[in-house]
Image 1: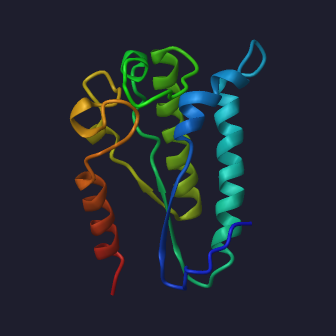
Image 2: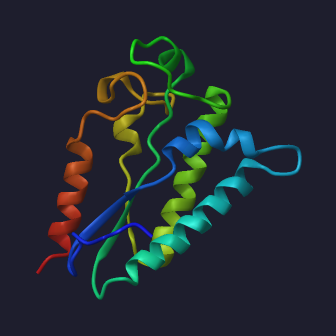
Length: 160
């Protein structure tokens, strides 16, 4: 397991899980027998096991899970000067993967008492894909204010 030597009791830890899975890997594991729902359900179950394992290393930490961000449209990823960012699946499939993944992560957090950092709409365009205004116009979020405010509010509500 990774080292958490800088984490102390009372810390908040935020995990960012699944963006590359949704963008690149889920489609490769689906077929006529295995649906994307089954693939994502299995991934979330493994994340859940690992997060519980990590949480039990400490007497008191707060675990947060960051949402799967809106997927980029293929035309944006393929027409950039930054290099290659792999995609698997159509735009619509990857949108469904991200949205279902977030449903599952939200439920996992609710079941475990973790916080789910949800700011999808702040980073999505009107179709649900990654917005140019809040991203690098390829695959990365760039506008931190919505997430920063959510985290600030969570900490403020739970301090004291």
